[in-house]
Image (cartoon, rainbow, N blue to C red; front, side, top):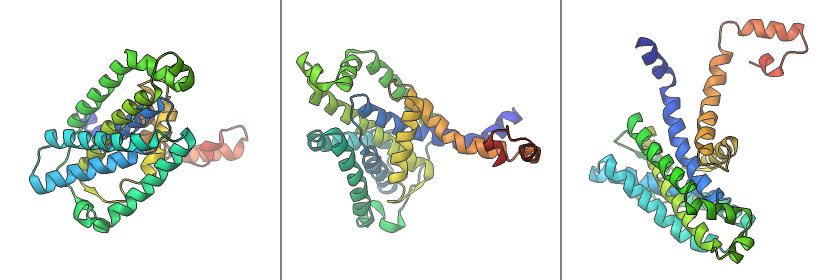
Length: 272
């Protein structure tokens, strides 16, 4: 039991942040599954995170209410953005969503009543790992059901070729709109989860770093299956901690000496 507690003390924060990043990766996967590359998940996360933080700070809203409110806010924002973004071509949509992330940061910095401005917001609540695990399990269950339903088949057709899908009676824009809303809902929950994990958020919290991390996690795990983003987010989050722990072992000096003696050793060992 002591070993388990020691492991949790050492890697507990990594597990928690892996679960938070999994929400962002699933949100990105939702739109990638219909052939849309968008960074708008960061915007949905910011909306959900700041709303949840304000509700808890000023109205003492319990977490089981704050999370659904963040999901609703993210979904509504996604519905509004989808109406404009889906009129653009894929690469222009990606650029527009990236520009929206920058605009969102500027707005957040200049709206201190809502976001705390440059000083940020203190979040007087913390989500437990069990609560995050339950939410993530519910999200993955929903994606599992969608993947094995008619929506999953239609999404695959739209992703491969929207023109061919439309000739089969499938409305690509409507399917992409639904995927956008799902992305907003999950992104809003992820933003609230990040706020309740850090217990302090600012405009810098929801910025480009999250955008590229979620894309990297989704691609690393695989964007063709609902489980891929979760696996990718876990690997992407745990990789720095794992490499740091591995390179700090007492016998790292032996690896360095071996690298000097032999040119056939992997270079990664030489730089640890």
